[in-house]
Image (cartoon, rainbow, N blue to C red; front, side, top):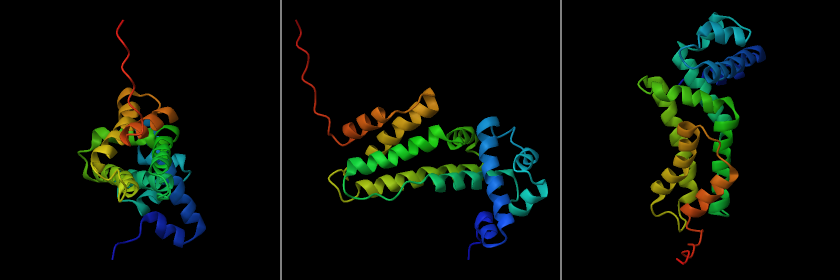
Length: 199
């Protein structure tokens, strides 16, 4: 049987332990987003969480394990509700809007960007892969058993690609208009425009 995460284990115990665990997870995300991976140290995390380095090592074996759990914790809090299955377009708006909000309006986005160059580290690569897989699963649930199921993976690539490209490559904000336009194009809801006549 798999051991419970440090957070789950501490929440089952004393309230003070749960508070310290949560503070450490939030501190790790903040430090990573502000300072990057290399500058994030166990000592700085403990100081930010107002606890000791020993408190960190009682919960995690090392910095990568703590950072990976901090990303998992933030992603779990940012996960959108399951699709309602009433409208593909509306479910996409909710899922993509939630994704954009988490990546550009919270420390999670900068934290993930800080980890992308470190994918060679197995524990960090695993958490980034889990994050991607979780988003893709939600999008598959939206597309499955609808007229848009054909080429579903490519549709997902196009939708997530817009978000990742604008945020991570260009460093630009993704707007509601960007999301709406992408949804309409991917679902084929935008009517083709008549060509402009040549004078």
